[in-house]
Length: 463
Image (cartoon, rainbow, N blue to C red):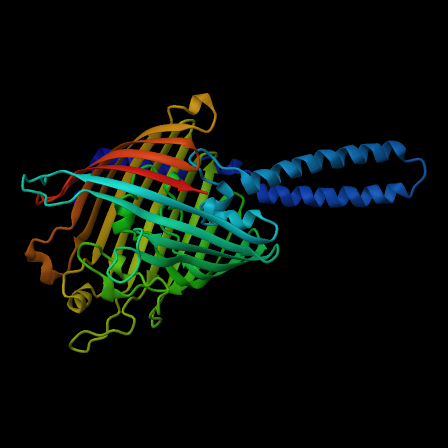
């Protein structure tokens, strides 16, 4: 794959180290912990107030206790309001994000009981260059697509148990011979035991990268999702299973045991993407572990690590009868920095695939034994100094990825190349945080000159 220039390596290293070694000693309590502490204080003060009401001559002390209860109750109400309703610039909800959800996906958490409905959607126009980088006709056709419309449907049974789901309609028309499809992206039950440890069971999102969990269009810059987070990390990626999630202080985590990938869907160009089983009569001979830990090291600064590991043979054998193990190990390092009008992200990821030669024999094409990639992006809100809801964000992103970073010895002399470089320059306008109008240009580059550059325009929303 194309190597990362030294300057880029230094930038990644400085950003990750600065975030990881930030002011950890000053980490403050989360809003949830502060709420629990204030609730404890209210209970104690109320008990003391009731005791004094039975004692003669305590009017002055009663007045003081009543004043203190009012102060604590006011702060408690303020914090509860922040927890359930507030979003930061970019349309994201910090409390929802710590659960692995975007604001629209987390609406069920913000109601007392019953049904909640949310959703998002995006329309994408793609205009392709008439020629490849090598000068040949590109033979591509411009496209305008109602890419997806999503409905989040949830039900809150009580304060401890809720159901949440994401129902996706892609490409407008689904059915035999139609380009679209209807699919369930998420469908799970949460058992809310304690902010530090809760249980989630059902169709869950694998907690890797940025976009797989936070994939609503207003939460990312470009007209379409980053290429790396559609190719190396296959977004959106959900599997059936069970796990735990929670937070303590500024640390949040998620860990799941789920059905694994199916190696029969792997390919040269798309890596493991076609191996997602999506809960559709999923083969369950092999299971996988996935997890994520994020640390808010300081206001606006987040650093984290995520991973996935599991066999993917799913009971399959080669034509010669050899069993396929196909263990896949994916990891990523990610960091995000928000400061005033600035929003920057860095993502570095790698995938190792065992038995790539056997999988290649199974699928009939070379599959890489290692896939890798990284990106850096930054944008600046030109309207941040004015306050208000509107945002105008020019941005730039550089991606490097390779689906054939390493191949088995049998394929080494075949001249295979899965490397791709992508530079995206664009502009995002948000009249409100939940609606994004996007325009960008993408320069694609690969070694054989077959890549095609393109312009994109999109309208995205969530509710």
